[in-house]
Amino acid sequence: MTNVKQFSKLPVFFILGRPRSGTTLLRALFDAHPNVAIPLESTLIKELGSKYSHVREWDIKILKEFYNDVIIQRWFNFWECDLIKLKSEILGCIGEFTFSDLIKIVYLNYHSYFNKSEIKFIGDKNPPFSTYPQKIFRLFPDAKYIHLTRDYRDNILSIMKVDFEVPYLPLLAYRWRYAAIRIYQLKKKFPDQFYTMKYEDLVSDPENELKSLLDFLKIDYVPSILEFYKIKDKLLLKYTLEELEKVNKSLFNPISNINVYGWKTKMKEKQIKQADLIVGKYAELNGYSREYTSFSLIIYISVIPGIIYGWIWQLGRLTIDLFPLRMRIRIHKKGSILAASYWLFYKLIKRNG
Image 1 (tube, helix red, strand yellow):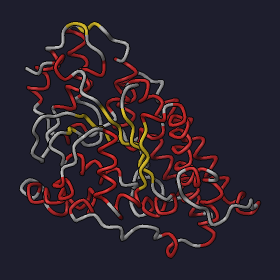
Image 2 (cartoon, rainbow, N blue to C red; image 1 turned 90 degrees about the vertical axis):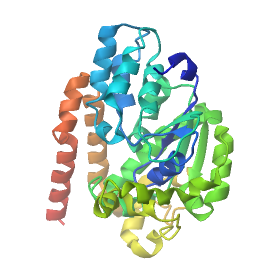
Image 3 (cartoon, rainbow, N blue to C red; image 1 turned 180 degrees about the vertical axis):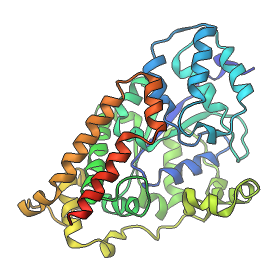
Image 4 (cartoon, one colour; image 1 turned 60 degrees about the horizontal axis):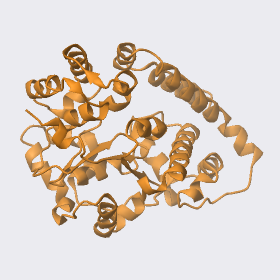
């Protein structure tokens, strides 16, 4: 049985950043650290927080309900937890505990393929959290926050290659800017709890960048974490190479900066102007320079549909967050109304040229 009081003071950190900004790479590096527990993605903290964050006294009934809500969360099955052990440890928390105590139990039950010794830090990596960091901060006000940012133009190009989001540039630029604003507002209020790292720096000088980051977290640097990609051999015992490469091919190779600033040769001039206009001053606030800083009415008119849809997307997300937990889960499991509307919108844009 896990001693909750023993690990309730374990420090926690969150990796915040847009999809395709290097957050998966950074999580893999932390997962390779023997003293860090950092599961795969699952937004269970955000989903369960609205229901359980106020609970202080836990009885067997609410603990069973909590467990049942945990195991039906999106992507949780990929954690490969021992569910019997997890349930036993959760049901053993009768009494006065916090929501974060229960979350730590769940996170410590994640099955990592890397060798672990004493866990001294618990981490979380969920790109969706970058759009509502204030909610996460309210749940974990004492945590450390790593803001991993990537040049918005490279980030947009990278997302357009995969099926994470609709490959429509104005919408992706809007979402990059929206996350940048939310994180920037929180960093201004609590600068000592934030560490900003550029993806470009991480892949160009990983050893020194990681040493600096781990020093901020007060975690010992372990050189072997840079060999995280060698875990591929263990994973191939369970998954095929094709299955692994669907996750992220770069995770099974040494760190490379080959994709840094590729937008300079791969992006059209109009695309650069659109991205620069939408992101605005938040480019410079995140350490990136715009090619075009003057306002263009023609370019602005061309990006209005993406901005409007981005606003509708945000309103829809906030509305869904007001629904009861089980209703939200059903919406997500049925393919997400928002995701379906993204693709409909994208097809209409493409059809109209």
